[in-house]
Image (cartoon, rainbow, N blue to C red):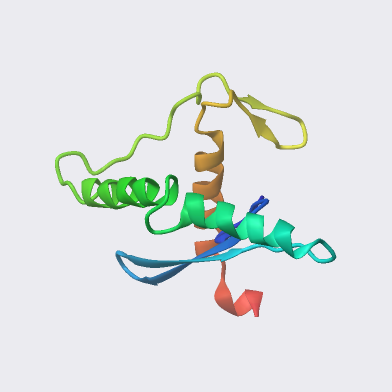
Length: 128
């Protein structure tokens, strides 16, 4: 489950991303333990967390390498625009305003950017 803009809760962890400066973001992760279960259950959850998200694991390190390379690539000046149009021509807007597309469409990425623009455009004094 993602809680916009920077909190993610999965079956095995809680993750928070914090922008520190332009080009610098901290990612904090904590393994999620269960109350009222045998200690072995939480120990197994921790070992699974380490196996997938640890520094020498199978999951996260390559993801973070990709994220860093994307960041470097986005600094290119050849074409300053990032296209987020996959599925734009086939998405459907429901009467309640919900926008739906195929699983591989960039509906959620466009929605996050629209919300970010909305939040960044708010009148701060009015919000206080």
